[in-house]
Length: 158
Image (cartoon, rainbow, N blue to C red):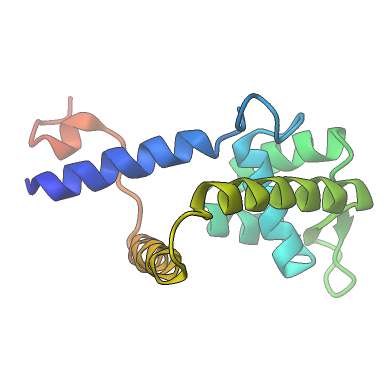
């Protein structure tokens, strides 16, 4: 395997760690996990979404999405309601508390990144953004792999 690919994986994993639910210096996301934050952000982007659409957007099962929504509802960040078009469909929207939490988190991380990148020239910052955008689009086009290690290492399943 190309060493650059391994390096990209390790660098993105390390980068993800710094933006995870532990935040920087332990301050950031309050009582939201990274999964809850991402779900809340996806719901906010669409204004209202079904649990199944959220699952598809985050690569979760409908059941997995439902559990995340349960936690967000319990914390007061999201609200389930039946669709006005089809009462059998459950939609999820973000509460005012959820919108405030997302806004605060985004503001904090944006300020943090601004501080980290302030010494870089604007073209370098643009190049970083473009490279991350290219990587994200490429990843979004591929289905995630089955995490069964034997499946990827050429081993046989038992």
